[in-house]
Image 1: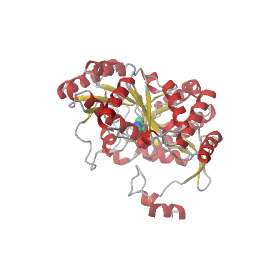
Image 2: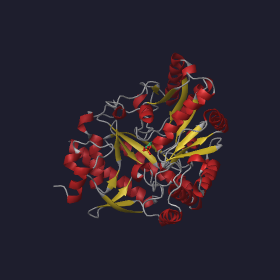
Image 3: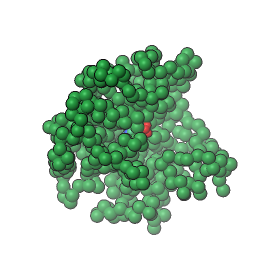
Image 4: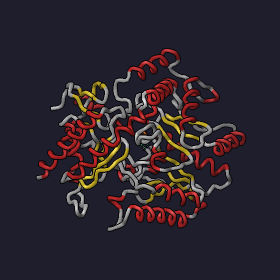
Length: 453
Ligand code: PLP
């Protein structure tokens, strides 16, 4: 029997990324409040939030300073915008700080309200740039199979997951996908990580040559592939990819929506993964998820072209009502100040060895084929047979079962396509809570094993 609140939900809400058929029976998990890394459901049950919400609540759930920053800005100026040259001090100050923080040459910051809008803006600006440069055919966008970049028409096209394409009439023409850099799942028998990444780089180059370099505009990639399975590319992968992109003048864009702001133990994932992109997209942990805000870095040559286009066209014809919302910017300013003052990013690097040791140890579990990550993110892949790496039938829903047992144990984790389970807790998680997280996940795996038997 669903509770009254749950029944009202089923009658009124459409839930993103939810099986809308089975949901009618199961109903929602209604979360009512949060404290630290814990959230509490409508019956008062606590759960360790092992996913930081949706990979975003880096500072946990009860940060009073962020609440105060929002409330002060809300009282002073709840809204103004950046259209037609209007401005406000939180956006100006935040852009200055982000410009300093960016690990890539950055002239300006463009704000959005989400990761999808940030990546959508990247696509549009790439096209706009190539028109301004007089190369109107250089428009194709490359991304990874299993990459996740958002849900707008363009970014769902970039996303390399079946659920974002099937029956959505996507991807649009001109969006191409390259091999997923997941050695455990996609390497050939006996292929070393080095040989695997060399092959992927060669395949990328072959694709660019086949399509014609004069038609290929950009490659968009996450440092660690998040929603596609919390997949860590092998060391040295991006250096090989980047050499190919440089040879063919293909813009390299890092989607830092999950990895940005400390997740891998560095300010940006690009630094940890040896990427030197032309531009970054960011969102999520920029405000610790407390308010919607995203953005992209714009380098000086691109900025000059944008100015040139305004001279020609009369305006920069892009932006949304909430681009650089003042309350969201105020919260982002406070979030970054806390990251710096409380050494949050250094703290991730310090806690990572414990987190990764507990994660790797799960590979000994009979159900787990791979358990791997970096910083405070990781994924496990469930297999029916460790030796052959054979997976369970998707219909068996084994990863979903692990997640359900974890929930029964008081832990929130997420299952992803390919029988993978992701963990990505708030960056402020304490060492004792890391142990609680993995103890509970271990018990969820044991219960799943018993359920299968
Ligand atoms: N890019 C990455 C790497 C993401 O993980 C996400 C969301 O999870 C997005 C883009 C899309 O961001 P949003 O959901 O804010 O539109």
